[in-house]
Image 1 (cartoon, rainbow, N blue to C red):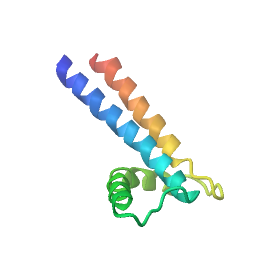
Image 2: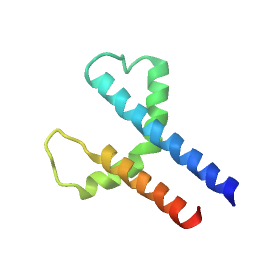
Image 3: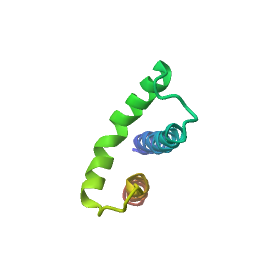
Image 4: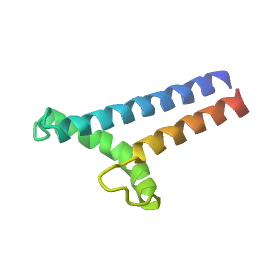
Length: 92
């Protein structure tokens, strides 16, 4: 059971880091530092978007309109951390 818990923790850690990379990449594109039309960048962004956009779109549908500020990645990060803590509290 301990090895399964460690595996789930590793998967959650990878998800969190990929979310941070996705947010950082979107900022780099918004400030014209990275060219989004480059094939490698487009491939990475499409992969990260397919992983994170389903959860963030559900969060965005519940949030009120805050203008140009998108706090859905922060809420997703907090939710994943909360689930990780629950996992260790009840299974650890």
